[in-house]
Structures are given as structure tokens and as C-alpha cells.
Amino acid sequence: MTKPRLRFAPSPTGYLHIGGVRTALFNWLWARKTGGTFVLRIEDTDQERSTPENEQIILRELAWLGLHWDEGPDTGGPHGPYRQMERLEIYREFSDRLVASGAAYRCYATKEELDAAREALRAADPKAQFRYPGWWRDKGPADWLSDRPYVIRLRTPSSGHTGWNDLVFGEQRVPNDTIQDVVLVRSDGVPLYNFGCVVDDITMGITLVARGRDHMINTPIQLLVYQALGVTPPTFGHLPMMLGKSGEKLSKRHGAVSVGEYREQGVPALGLLNYLVRFGWSFGDQEVFTMVDLIDKFDWSRTSRADGKFDAAKLTAIAFEHMKRADLMDDDGYVASLLPWLARYGAIDERKLRAVLPTVRPRARTFREAAESVDWLFALEPTFDEKAKEKFLLGEKASVLSPLRDVLASAPEFAAGELEAKVKSWAEERGYGLGDVAQPARVALTGRTFSPGLFEVMELLGRDVTLARLDAAARLRG
RNA sequence: GGUCCCAUCGUCUAGCGGUUAGGACAUCGGCCUCUCACGCCGGUAACGCGGGUUCGAUUCCCGCUGGGAUCGCCA
Image (tube, rainbow, N blue to C red):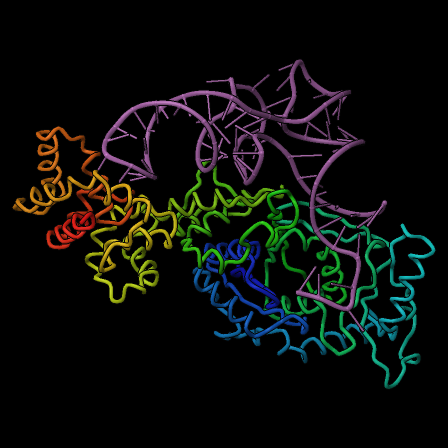
């Protein structure tokens, strides 16, 4: 059996949408699982909105996510080029074939004429739906107008049905008379989606097309194109839609929808993918997966058909699992991802960073949070929270700082366990609750009222810095 | 409106004729505790409605209702 070939075919008309990532992920997973090929194709035939910058963003985000492609615009491959605007001769060849065989025809109707007809119909019957009136459907080469622009339309059968066995939705059947004579090629020679897509999938040897359910309406049209071309179509599978919080199409109004925004928030790539894979796919009660596990377990039979609503809180929770658990992301990977977030502190002592990891990982939900939570360790001095400073360092509560400093100074080893034992017994002797001592000390050392365990903080800072910060804080009262 | 699709807690979902309808997130209690988290324990919370089929329907069929997609020289 030949290996499957799958593709992700975004149009570079904007940022990379997380719904698109979900589609890319399912295709990618299947390619990886089966040893097939994952192709990245850029559908840039909308020249109004497509930009090279957007293409670069898409490539960069996919790479960040780890969804690497085997063939694509930058890597090349045996079926290139991988940008549609570089494939115009190919489409031309295919559309010529269709016109020659009579499966498609030239239509010289202008946009203005069509708009006028559309308007006229609306005026006569507001509820009627406009269809192309077929002005050029039954004309031939003898009627062609020289020096006038024309589009190429598909001659759609007026009876019968077009159907397919959808990988996710099962048997589908659509009456042909509901399908219009769609435009295949614009008057400037650039193909439209339903044509370019089919020609590319044919010439790129795509065997399985998995895409969002919003494309399900296009599938019968494309099937008709395959039929007109005399080519066996690939398998189609449609994925349920990812909708916004209140059930409409997911858009910017619901918060972040572009991958870049999540990357900038410090969400781990695998955490994002893990959330997305559970959207329309499940494996019993399992919520959390490694990529290896996912490739092993993914399959089309476990996909669901119902649309769902995007839930940012759940995404954060799943991503948090990846931030916490070493079995999902080892410390090497964690450090590699965190380092860029620490750039403001200059060169980072990686040993110090690794030492603090056990106290950071259970707390930080994103890399951004992780970076913020270690500023006390890497900055020269703590950045004080003003309210905390006033409450714990400027008032009576700060009186414990000097004696505490002396107790700590006498410790032979500056290790968390030892410091804790020493401070606890000292506090008990003096009749202090540990909290009375810990909060002022915490603010003195970290600048904040919350931090990892106080004695771990001390150990990580080391004797010199700890004592110096306590001294400095004690002096604040004057 | 035409065509197509869907329907289990607020959300993502498990379930594939007989279950006290399970898990996760969120939420609400409690425990732990030097703070904040993590963690742990527990609670609230769902099969849209009406007909069939069946000894028995969340599960199979039909209708209704509700939601969604789409109807471009966008993709």
C-alpha cells in the first residue's frame, strides 16, 4: 500500500489561526503515524490580501509548533512549486483540457452584468437566491469574443447526485442541481479556490484531505471537478468547527485566535497542540499527551462530529500540565524555552536557573509567568511591591529582620533544611509565629509577599545575597 | 429561504441497548501550609422535546425544536 500524502494549505491572508493549526495538526499526526508525507502549500491566489510577510509568519509559527513539513515553499520537493501563484501554467493546462472537453466553458459575462442581475432579482423577489443564469453555458468557440476578458466556469450536471464517504461524517450526498456553474478561473487567469485546490491535490499526489467542516460545502464541487478531469479523488475528512464562546465563528472578539499571541503569552507549543487535539478527538478519558503518545494513538475513528466552543481556561490548564510535568517536558526543553524570556537579565547562569526549576515549575502557568517569578533571583536587587514594602519593611513588622539576619549568619551550611530548622527553633524561643518572621523576610528577599518557600529562596540566593538583602531591608526604616 | 451538518454537566468530552451516566477544565467547600502556588479530599452540575423499535433506550429510526456552515471573479 502506498504511503498517504497529506497537506496543509493555508492562505497567507493573515495570521495563523488556531483553528487552522488544529487542521494542520490532524493532518501532520496522520502523516507521522503512517510514515506518510506532510506537504505545506501556500494558497496565495487572493492577490488582494495575500502577503509574503504573512507567509513567513505562517512558516515560522508552524515551525515553532514543531509541525514540520516534508515538502513546502522553502524546503522544495518533487511536486513543487508549492505556492499557487507560481503554478499558473499548470492550472492553465488543466483548464484548457476542461474547456476542450466541454466540461467547462468560457463565460464573458462581466461582474457588472452579474451584479445587475443579482440586484434585479433581489428587487423582484427578496427571498429568491441568485444563481448564475447560464448565459454562456450552451455557447461554444464560435461565440467567443476576441479581446474581451472571460472567466471559465464548470458545466455542472443538472441532475443526479454527488457523494462521498467522509472519513468523519460518513456517507454524504448532495443533489447536483443545487450546485451552480462555479467560476474555476478568474478573468485574469488566476484560479479560484475550488479549482487550484483540486489541480494541486492531483498534481501533488494528495491522498487524504482533512479540513474544517466549513469546507464541506466545497467538497461536492471539487468532486465534480475531479470527475470532469477524469481523476480519482482523494479521501475527504471534515473536522468539526471550533467556535467562539457564544457559539459563533471564532474571531478576535473572543481574545487571542492567532498562534503568535499564545506564543507571546508564553504558552508552551506542545501544550497548545495538546489542547487543540482534544478538540474533536478523544482517547477515552485521557486529557494529556506527549507527542510520541499522540502519534501512536491518533486515528480518525475517534474524531467527533459536533462543533465545539473554544475555552481559553481549559487551554491554560492543559498547557499548565506541560509546564509542570517533567514527563511531558524535560528540564532541558523547559530551560531552552525559558531562556529567551530571561534576556532582560543579561547572561543567565544556567546552573542557577536549573536549581530554581523545582520551585518554579509547579507555579508558572506560562513561560512568561516563569520568567516573572524568578526576577528576584536574577535581578541585582529585588523589585519591591510598594504595598508589601510599606506593610512589612517600613513598619514594626520589620523589626525581626536584623535578629533574623544574625541567626542566619551563624548557620554553618546555607541549606534550606538546615535554615528552616534553625529559624523555626529560634522563632519558637522568641515566641514568634513563623509567619511573623517569614513575610518580612520574603519581601526583603524577593520584593513580594508571595514566592517559593522562603528557605529555598535563601538557599538559591546564597549566604551573601541573602544577608545583604536583609541588611538593606533593615536599613529602610532608618 | 435553498443545500449540508450537528445535539451528554457552564466548557471539552467518555459512553457504541441494561452504568449509582465516567473524566477533565471552570465553580463551591475542606485539608496541607512561612506566603503564593502545587497537591489531596469532597460538593453542585448533563442525556433538548415528541413519537416509534425493543422486555429495556442517553445509545437505533422518524419528526420537531435549537445551533452551526455555506450560497462571491474569498479561501
